[in-house]
Amino acid sequence: MKNVQVVRTAKDTNEKLTKKEGLTLRPDPVEAPYSVNVDASQCFQTIEGFGGAFTEAAACTLYKLPVEKQAAVLQAYFDPKSGHGYTFCRTHINSCDFSSGNYAYDEVAGDHKLAHFSIDCDRRALLPMIRDAFQAAGGPIKLLATPWSPPAWMKTNGQMSQGGKLKPDCQQTWANYYCRYVKEYGRENIPIWGLSVQNEVEAAQTWESCLYSPEEERDFVRDYLGPTLQREGLTDIQLLVFDHNRDHMVDHARVIYDDPAAAQYVWGTAFHWYVGDWFDNVQRLHEAYPEKHLLFTEGCQEGGPHLGEWDLGERYARSMINDLNRWTVGWIDWNMALDETGGPNHAGNYCSAPIMIDTRSGEILHQSSYYYIGHFSRYIRPGARRIVCTSDSDTLETTAFLNTDGQIAVVVLNRTSQSLPFALRFESLSAFTKSLPHSIGTFLFS
Image (cartoon, rainbow, N blue to C red; front, side, top):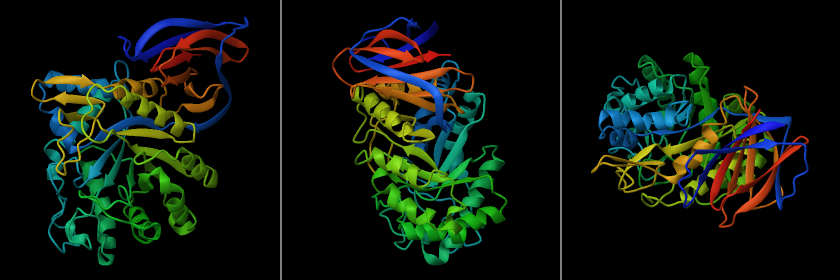
């Protein structure tokens, strides 16, 4: 026999990451319409971690709360015992749309020596939030940093917004800029784990953006950024490419990976979920280049705050299950906190976040996405390895991982309006259980 802990979140109930009565896996036969089968004899990718993004908008929103409520939000995300235990996060280099406005760390045109480089703008709110999060985590957090745009004077269009490209004569300066950023953050005792070359390489947004063709990103990595990181002694920095939607990730990454001189500098491909799913492209990229890693680096519900909407959580869980089952090694949400409008956002690109904060009342509003993310991040810990987990029903979506302490975590998602009875099977043991309508469950056993 084997005892199973059960944690469940379900629509139209009070169950939100609620510990339920456990199950016992027994050798006795179990009859059920469906089954979820777990096999730990074969392992796949190793998990780096789960987390969200530190943005200026998230930080400014957080610090409008009283101190004790600030701590509650950070504990909800980072505390490894009472919260989500986040260990892998992202932040922006220079401004992004979820900033107070366009800004760069060096806005003096022609300053190729970066004599005027300063991260003072990050000291207002962003750096304090990161520091407070590190303290709440009580352990290491890997931090990925991404630029939305170089400074305007380095761009062909002379502005940080509306796309444009990096000027050819600024490529070395821009490579030096990343290194300067990493070192300045290091002086603040905030280590940078990795860099992605550019956020959304294909998007000419009305906010900060910069376009790279696959060939342009390849050449920049090969001839400038990769060698500069090495010369500056930053060989431990992991470098990611693309950082855009799944639709074109294979074709874009292939151009870079097929050039050994560029590929030697690249840890893996970062990707987002917007516009469409294209989950199979994640699998295809792994099959073509199994030595490279896959990292989901941004997803959110667009078009406003969406307060109280249940399908937000289901969107997150569906993406997480499908990405993880296709060799993704980590999953990073977008803004960790936003205000009641879905901002602040200087471009009017309002969105939702797993924790929304009503800055008028000081109320902390945990959205369905917060609870759904927790079914993964709390129980699939860094170092866990994916194992075989199959469902004989399209309506029961599932993944499973073997943690370093020997505990197995099985996640089962039901996005239907039906209660789905199923047998949970492991080796020669099984137990009968049900997946409630619009619910997610995590099953834990050793």
